[in-house]
Image: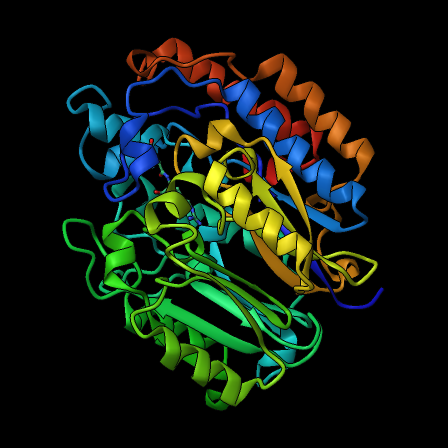
Length: 416
Ligand code: SUG
């Protein structure tokens, strides 16, 4: 099979909860302390994967990381009872947001003609900073073929790196030479700027990208301050199209010009702030969408139902669909459990351009496997988790056994 885009969604783990761990992520803070529904959450995520499969697209999966993370608790000298936030960090199911697992450069862009993946260190948030060693282990299994893939360790923790959430790629097609756009933050007012410019530059060097086809762009500090803790909350690109909020970048016109100079075929769809304010964009997650090329060649935007139901966002989408723009379809999906932690459809997936035959088939999804996963989730994932239960031995036992049952069902006990 030819090179295609494969979206690898993170299966939402059995310890999914609302601990409010992410300063600057307004949904995370505002839902802190709510009861979470891990089973419903994982089934919503699975339904999104099936939705994309049914569109005729290649779909991959990544497994939840081991939680509670005993190694993390040991490393901070805690047994899990002293500090509720440390306990919650060790229990977080945040690896579901695989857009933060790594940055990916397809083979067409790299000097050695292999697809490069660099795990993200996620150092800004303690609960996320512990993900990368297990992420690397998983990526090295999924993308083990050295003729086609290189998996790099995370860049040093002095430079925060949040992976593909701050990386966009444009090109005539997925398999063609692309323009890679890295978006970094310098300040975000009261909120942290999570992506360091030097992390982006290190990843570009490690991936052996052509400097003439690489751009480094500053995120608008006002966007971070308004709650766009990752660039993918305010912009998304796919092939020829960049779909962006007017206030996404520190220098919007300079950014568009730089893109057009390097990629004249670029079509930039800008949503003006007077139609959809930054606050509306962040609340609805309009841009945290999967902009997909369907087998017909048409582009579709997979958005959260929150965006579809938002009056001003809906008005803008209706006008866009009525115009002759490059995005021809809008497809709402329900990922409400993830959304309440600030993770929309785009956060839940890592895009990899590759020939599926070169990927470990255990990480590729089809209907039969989706049914197997569904059975395990329905039987083993806790129905509800209240924050007070996080850290308890009974729940730990349940969460560990649930993940193990999934690994067994997928023949992936190498990750146990
Ligand atoms: O890192 N939320 C995640 C959401 C990640 C979204 N990803 C992208 N935009 N690509 C984060 O802030 C919340 C956890 C909690 O509050 O319990 C959390 O980690």
